[in-house]
Image (cartoon, rainbow, N blue to C red; front, top):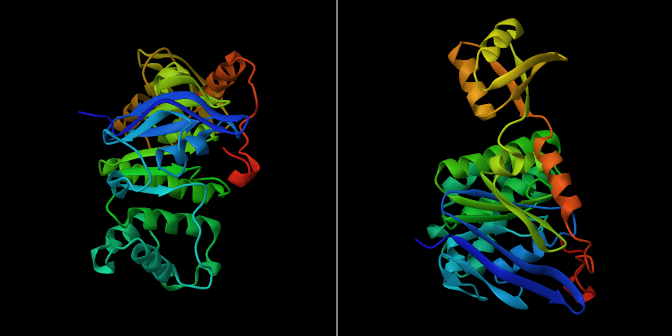
Length: 317
C-alpha cells in the first residue's frame, strides 16, 4: 500500500534563496507525524508544496500515491490549516464555515458539520461573531472547517502557535482524538514538547534539509528521565523501583524523577495505575530537547537562511 504522504527530494527556491533543500520523508496511514525544526527551517514551505500551493523547484510530493498538482482530486481527501486559520470577523462561526464550504462548490447539506463541531468542541460559540473568539477558539474553528469534508489526512501548520497552555492542551487532545479515529495527521512545530507528547513519528528539519527521521522514541533514544506526580508518593516510589527497566527513583519537588534503562513512560503509567495509584502528571525531562540540540549542532553550516522572497509574503517557516 502506498504511503499517505510521500515527499521525495523536494527542493523549493525563491530566487537565490533555497527554502527547502532535497527534503524527503513519508507518512503511513494512522501516524501522527511531526515536522520539527526551528523557525525558518522550511516547514511551512514544505507543507505548501505538499498541498499544491507552491510548485516544487525540483522533487515531488504525493498524496495517497498520486503526485500533487493544483486542483488534484486527492486534495479533497485532505483537511488543512496552513500558516493560520483566517475568518471574516463580523460573521458568526457557523456562517464562516458555510461560506467557505459553498465557495469550494460543495452543498452545505453534504458537509459533516455535526462531527466537525463535536470534535472541535465549539459548542454554543458557533453562533457568535468570530471577532469575539479567543485565538484558541479561532484555531478550533479552523479545525472544524478542516474536518467538514470527512478528511482522511489532516495537515496542520504550527497548530499551537500563539496559544496559551490551556488552549494548547485542548488542541493536543483534539489531535489525539483524530488519531484515535484512525486519521493520519501531519503537523509542523518548533515546540519540542508538543511533538514529543503528540507525535508517533517525526522528521527534524534545519535550513530546509532533513537532519533526522524516525519514531519519536528512536529520536530521543527510547529511555531517559521521566517526572511523575501522583497522589501517593511513597507507594509510587516502591512500585517504580521494583520495575526491571527502572535504574533509579529520586524525589524532585512534589514528585519523583525516574530513570529508565528501557521502556517508555507509558509503561510507568500502566504500572502505577495497576497498583491503584492516581497519576497526576507523567512527563519526560527534556529528552527530545537534548536530542534536538545535538542534531542542530551536527548540521553543516547553512547557506542562505529560509526566508521567502518578498513576493512570497514574509518569513517562511
